[in-house]
Structures are given as structure tokens and as C-alpha cells.
Image (cartoon, rainbow, N blue to C red; front, side):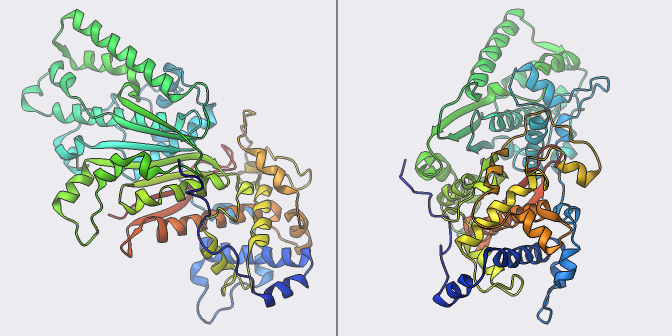
Length: 520
């Protein structure tokens, strides 16, 4: 605990000189709001729709063209990368329930419902896509060939990899629990698969002893949350360990040493796709504003080492192969995302973080004081694209209030349950557990609402379209901070940072995902 160690965001908090303050004082709230609305659309178009349309001789889009942008144009400018399907693949075609869902039900893990499971599954899929944890290895799949193992770069060093997953703002820790236990399952099955390629085990009968003797390192799960909670991940892990010990005793009492491949698979089927008993969990009870992650997790720093890129050696490479550390978060509200990013700066500067996947949420609860993208957002709004003479806290506060419009109906000013239907011409399969609509309270405050602004300017995208554009610009500022500050070492760009929709808006309107991984 270090009081306020992660507070303050990044960048100057104010830049308004006396001339700019005087100019702003001569504008009423509607005039300033109109300026900001057009600036938001210009910047969004420049970043996400058509960057090549801006050059040194171009003044950019006209206001008439900006008015023609629709809500669908803004939504579809961000790529949809829903990777949940592969986590739910099930060999039994008659079983309509997905593999991950079956595993969660079997372990009696309270996941929050089908929509939350899909979000967790997609985040897990993104971790695999970034090579932060092994590709999905199902006990249903055929044993992998040596050629496949070579292609996947699975070797002795890789099999001994220590994996650490840190969940920020963890709550009960269900996201971290699923990701860690899935990683443990994949590592274990990968090791068994490689063991089964040995010539002496290639016959029909499979000796179970070599497989049982393989002891993959446990996946370390670190949960960071300021308060205690019920139905925690730790409880599920303790239960799984007890079951595993009981199963081991039963197997020992049966005195069997050789079984067929089908028997072995059947014995492992209780795991489904999660190995909770191979997860070691640590919970850090501390507010993200005050947690010193460098001091709390010194073993990550010692494993990563502090060698610079120019001093990179084979020994350093071997060290990095033996540990992979990733950070995950799901719906980390408002300024919580900025505080979490700030808390990682010392670990990142030491090279101890290999990847980061965060689903953002509740942009209406962001804070200019804690926001890490202040300088970048100011440079966009005050540059050639934005065209404003200044950008400061009052402007940011107006933007963050506008973000709430993405989950509101423009007529009723109430949370909209059919937001995705307007975009996809389908029905919203909401199960009544819409998360984080609490940011809708931010719709009131100083200045006009975005619905009033959109109506006055005649914007086809409406208030919800601009609200979603504001969300993505705030997230873009975070991406820039991660790429240019947090994960930049020795003036070298080491990480690629992307922004995507990780599930459809019908699953959750707060569907943006920031993903960062090392450049290979």
C-alpha cells in the first residue's frame, strides 16, 4: 500500500492560457457543445474510418459530410472480434450447451449468465490469439503430431513455462479463475500430448504412469480488488483441489497402471476444459489507486530481469521463456482502467508484463484527473483534425457525459434495451442483468445533452452515435498511453496495442476491448 501511488493520470491537467479562457467565456454551452460534437466526429473518422483522407493539403471532412455519418457507420468502424465460439466447441453435436458452459456448470461456478460466459470466453480466446496461453487443447481432439507440436513451437522450455495471470478490479475473480484454469488445462494437455508421441507409447495401450507423473507448474492467479466478496474464486479452487486429491486416492486404490486411450480420456473428462486444481491463487486487497504492484509481486520482476534491449542475451531470452505474465480485466469501471494501467508502469518498465487484455466500461465515470490519455486527446482536439483552439477538463467532462448516450434511448432518456437491434436489425436477447448501466446517471450535468446537440446539428448518427464515438476516443487515448508510454522501453516500441469489439453489442453495449502484446 502506497497512498495515491497510481493517481494523477498522465499528461498536463490544464493548458488553457488567458486568451483561450477569454474566448471560451464568450461561447455559450450550446456553441461549445456544437464545436466539440463536430470535432469528435472528425477525429473519429480520421482514426477509425479513413486516416488516408487526411494529408498536409486537406482541411478534412466538411460538416455536411459529417452530418451524414450514421450510428451504424460509427459502430462498424471498430472491428468485431468475438473469439468465444472456439471456447465453446463441443464434440457432441447433440449437446447444445457449450464446452466452457458445461465446465462452469459442473464446477458450480456462478458466471452471471450466458452473456457473461460469452464475454469471458471471448477474452480467453483473445489471450490464446495473442499466444499468451496455449492454443485450445481439448481432450476430444486427436493426439497432436510432432509436426504440429513443432509448428506451435512447443518445446521443453515452453512446457516448463510459469504462467501468471493478474486480474485487476477482480471482484469475485471469475474472469481470472476461468482464464487461469483454462491455461493450466491447456499446458497440462499439451505436455501429455507431447509425452504420448514417444515411440514406446505409440501403441494402442497407453501407459497412464508417464502422463500422471507429468507435473506442469501451477498457473499463478493474482486477484486485485479493494474489498472482500462472497462466492470467490478461491473457494472454487480449494474445492477442486480436494476433489483432485480424492480422485488420486481412488485411482491408487484401484491398482491400475495401464488403460486404453478411451479410458484415459474418460478419466480426464471431469475437467471438461478447466483445471482448477492446478491454479494457485493470491488475492491483494487494495484499492487500485494505492496498490504498489512492483512491491507486491517481486517474483515477477526477478524472473523478467531488468536487462535492456541492447543487453539482451540468450540467458535473458531463456528467463522470459520460463514465465509469461498477463493482465486481464472485465468491465473495470471508469477511472479504474486508468488506475490499473498506472499501477502496471513499474512492472512494465522492468519487462515483467507480456500482454494485457482489458474490457473497458462506464466511460461516464472517468475522471480528467486520473485519465492517462490527456496529452494525446488534447493533441487530437487542438490539432489540424480537431480544429479547436483548446481542450481541457470541462470539455472532457462533457465528452464523458455524452458517452452515456450509447446505452440510452434518445426519446425516453432511459437505458435502451434494443440498442443492437437498431444496428443489426435483430432483437436484444437481454436476460435482465445488463451490467453497468449506472453510468447513465451521468447524462445530467453542466451543458446540453448530446441528444439536444445532435438534434440541433441535424446529425444522422444521433446522440447514441456520438456517445459511442466519445467512448472509443477515450479508449484510443488509453491505447496510445500503453503503446507510447507504458510498454515502451529504451525508446523502442515493444508492444502492439489494438482496440476492437470483443462481443456484439447485443451481448453488452460496453463491448470494447483493449489488447496489448509483444511485437514478435
